[in-house]
Image 1 (cartoon, rainbow, N blue to C red):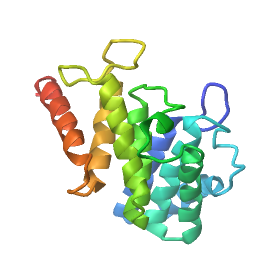
Image 2: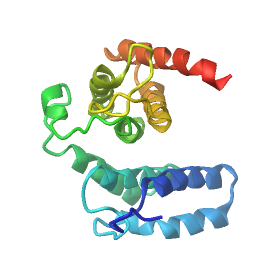
Image 3: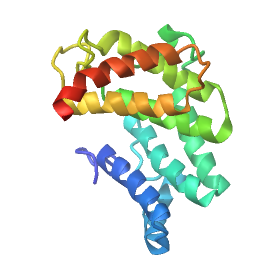
Length: 207
């Protein structure tokens, strides 16, 4: 499933692929695993035509490569995924310096999923503290700008409406970060408070 401009894979397939790879492993379906790895093998190459040439969509491909690495433990998969994550942050400077970190941020609720999902994968594998500090600080910046008093998230800083899928991106991104964030991390409390405000707000509509 390609992006509208045919410049690379669409994020919908990225999410589906990550889930399919995990399912194939849990179901012990070796045939499916082989087919999926063959489909996404080009992600190991920087020049892969399925990887968009720029923008945030480029780095989403790392989710698929991380998923494959978690099941095959081949170092070249980890190297490829790590390279995409590091490329994303190249030139962004100290992850503690918000004014630097957010110089290219769009402040769309969509962005609250992929960055806070990618970096914790790297942290879980390598233990690199930067890989958990970055998504924690990223989320705090988005929370400050997008979370409404009722706990929901507006779509962007330019528009005030609440978009259901955007709320889902925020919920998933917060979850993925909190799952790996150390209990003593200084950003854990504000992130958990934001997450709970969101859950209280969406709970009535889910019942």
